[in-house]
Amino acid sequence: MKGLIIVVAAVVVIIVAFLIWLAASYNGFVKLRNKTEEAFSAMDVSLKKRYDLIPNFVETVKGYASHEKETLQKVIQARNMAMTATTPEDRIAGDNVLTGTLRSLFAVSENYPDLKANANFMDLQNQLSRIEEEIAGSRRYYNGVVNRYNTKTEMFPGNILASIFGFKRKPLYEVQDSKERENIKVSF
Image (tube, rainbow, N blue to C red; front, side):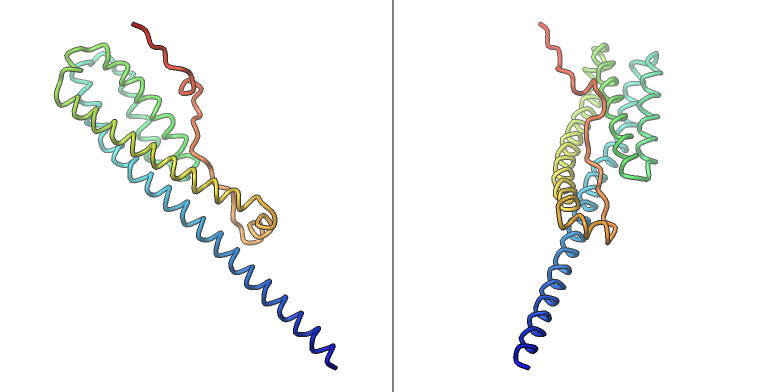
């Protein structure tokens, strides 16, 4: 009889320990998922600032470089595509396209000394540079949190719990344009 009580008590302790582990693991997934969503949301705030600033920037450039319509239209199209994206994957892809078109707009502005001397243009360019720094910081934070979340969803035994409870891998914010990976050419 005493042996049966010890066996039952051991089984109860094991079950309680398993349930505590299961609850802690599940809560860990929820916490990391919420952090990834919060990180994406923080980045989204910076992206919204950028989206709001771009039309002013384009209008300023348009006044000086009216025959650069194609570049200006690409920037606006990329902005609209990024703004209307509904999934994180689409938002990331749209933002990468927008970043590339903004670089081409900056390159166009280099050809217009009057534009580069315009105080309004310089102020907008400085604001856009600050926002780009915010976005870069937000991307680093987002990628760090997503990396922890993805690691937890892929490592044993977390991968089993992740599949049971439907925790899926989240996308990282990566450079997708091969031109962005090229070295910058500096010449004097």
